[in-house]
Structures are given as structure tokens and as C-alpha cells.
Length: 312
Ligand code: KIV
Image 1 (cartoon, rainbow, N blue to C red):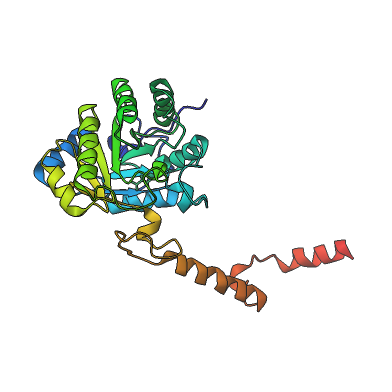
Image 2 (image 1 turned 120 degrees about the horizontal axis):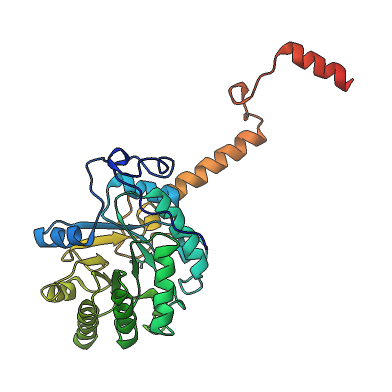
């Protein structure tokens, strides 16, 4: 198995390994330090909002890098955003590894978190640890994320943390178990359901998770829980009280059909732009407007004449 491309130095000129990474690393603010767990905790302490976004390939990683986000998640949402499935459960670990490696090549400073896909960690702590080790060793992830806060996921988180791999938890709407949760809908809307989410979040925190995602829970519930959370909480559809926010890259940039969940704020409409761009290209080809002279290579007329003779 190949070794992973490790996180390039944020300032290659200061790196003891200054050669070799230049083609892989993305120009970024040379003053920006790589995100670390202590820095993350410090930002929470200072009340500085944490920014997290998903990425699935080199260009999306470069966009995250250039925006200076704190955390990048190679989410299993890749199943729906880039692989065309209608749910996250079908995505294979091998697919996630390919995507995570591409993201690694595009990142210098954000913390890179690899999502553990459905079926890659549920069976045993040993299976979870094996998967997490692969995500770090072969894909270059700095940390992993897993879904759920029941006894089994908490045990998996504890085992992975125990091996020295940072783990991000995820409670509320956990898409891998959306069927059991009654569909893709907000969670924690009754006192008992919200208390269950609280218990799960606290159990993950106690197991050593360095941060926890709260997904699709009422903002008022998040506010109630935040006073109990010592580790950074990153929200998605969980209101403004969390320490940070995460959005799916394709949702925020409009690389999708439809608007997506209610909590999404759209900052661009790239699917429309892509559709229009490809349609314009197709029309240019059909109308013989492309390629134009500026898109073609030249040849010395004498060489062309010789070729003509040779072919005669
Ligand atoms: O897979 C994913 O994109 C996620 C985020 C929504 C947190 O889990």
C-alpha cells in the first residue's frame, strides 16, 4: 500500500523539506498556521467562529484553502454530491479514500477530516480502528468523523481516540441511519428526543472526541446544550449558538438540482453556470464557431507543402 501525501508545509521556504511538495501545495496565506486541535480549542475559548466545509476533490479543496477555512470534511455526502447515489449508505470506503487523497493534495492549512462511511466501522472497535488508520495513513487525513452517539459509536470513538487518531462526533440527524430516524428530518423536537441527543453528545465528548457536529436540531435545543459542551460544536441546521458552522460544498455553491435542505444558504448557482457553459460549447461546435483560428496550431508552409507531396 502506498504511503499518504502528508500535509504540505504552509510556508515551504521555512520547511526542512522545502523541495518536493511545490506541485502539490496550493498557494495560501503564508502567515496562516495549519489548524491544530489546540488552536481549535483556543478559537472556541475566544469565541471565534469556526468555519468548516466539505470537499471531495482537488478543486474543492483549493477553494477551501483559498477561503482560509478551519476544517475540511471529506464527507460521505460525496455519495449524493459527486457519485450520484440517492443516499449516503452506498458509498464505499475505497471511494472515500480516492476522494480524500485528492482533497489532501489540495490542502495546506485546514484540518482534514475523513468521514468513515457506512459499513466501515459499525461491526467492531477493531474494524473502526482499521478504517481510521487507513484514512490517516493512506489518505493523509488528520482526523476522522463517525456518526451516532449510542453505546456502539461511542465505543468506536473511544477506541480510535485511544490509538491516537482524533475523532469528530456527529449527532442529531445522522444520514447513515436516516431510515431508522424516520427520514431526512429535524431531530430533537421533543424534550425526550433532545435529551437523548444531549446524552449522546456528552458521551462522545467524554470518549475524547475533539469536536462534535450537531445536525438538524432546533436552534433552541442547541442553545440549551451548548453550556454543557467543552469541545467545539460545529452546526449544520442547528442554529447560530454553535462554535462553528459546516455546509456541504455543493449545497452552498448550488451544484445541485433544487434548493436542498432549509438550513442551506446558497452563495452561487454553479450548476446553472455549468449547464449554460456546456450548452454554449455544444452550440458553438454544432454551428462551427468552435474552434476558431486562435484555438489552432500552425505549421511552416514549406513543411505543409512537403507533407502534401508525401501524401499525393
Ligand atoms: O457527510 C457530510 O457532508 C457530513 C456533514 C453534513 C457534516 O457529515
